[in-house]
Length: 436
Image 1 (cartoon, rainbow, N blue to C red):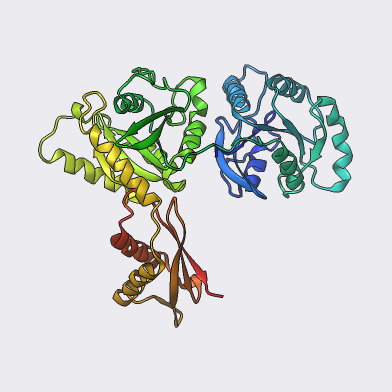
Image 2 (tube, helix red, strand yellow; image 1 turned 120 degrees about the vertical axis):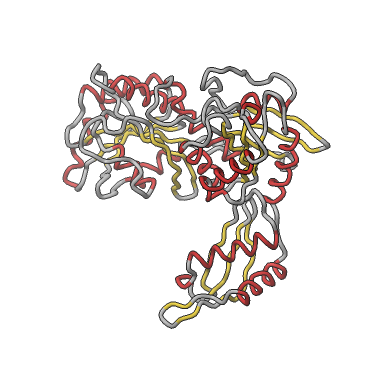
């Protein structure tokens, strides 16, 4: 199921980033009382009541030729295009401005649902200031305070009413869904074509050719697959076409729909920081992961080259120590035959459920091997463990006090569970809970 998307838009300095941080629940956007600080869209996931959604913070829309303003306006308009619902934010202390009216015109042309928020209404005496905002033609204005968190619930209630009702994906559980993610020009589209054996996706040496996520289906040895090619994710701050600037969100949507994610790395250029950031999206989403090193044919190598490159990957991607590594060449089709069996194995592990009695034998053997830690004279006691979910495999361990479960011991238990059951290619989650 693709999550609905809310975009927060408005002229500069009305408090968009503050509202964004309030909704997300952490300080993601830079907050500074200077117009134009938020130059790129910032994405995050959030939840309200029973709704999970993605939210975009944008730079302020301003009709101006001042530095960055043209780019900020393009960013905001692209976010509007990508959103299901738009929260139009204004400043209640300053009243309706000409810039607000210009933003309202842009939103009117988008034909998207708009919820009008009047920010900086910090006390009830200021509510009379909101009535002028009816003149913007965006419906009822909702008084809110980003600083104090007032009124956000009412705003989100109205926004949620506009979420698509039929956005649940008809998903065939017998099929394996997988996507390819990576920075532009690492050869994702070429790899899709090589795996499919036909030219279904445009291939070009121009970075960022693939704009949208494209589904292709194929069948091999009786198993059906859905492969999702995604637009390349590029490091913020580089010069690139404006239409690429929302490719990250589309890649995140592809990850959400995937059972397994292939993180594609360019063997020629090597590992860069952006590769780790991209892989982090898949890890945080709890998807199965395969690290794919493409263009291996273009690398001069000897008998040590592959081992040395693998050591570099393990050093850079320590959070993906469970992910297998496959070296391929989409151009020559070298080792591509190994990808599908690896996807099968990772998908199976991602959906693996273990018997409770066998799980508890492994956990108790681990405790016997390495006794539980103590803190201020109190020892952690582990009573029993159970698996509560798959995709990814998720376990709850019932203990006397979760505060006594040190991170290092939790990591030790994870390693013991992996050693016993494999779980190659999939993250696993373990949560300590107090036994009631």
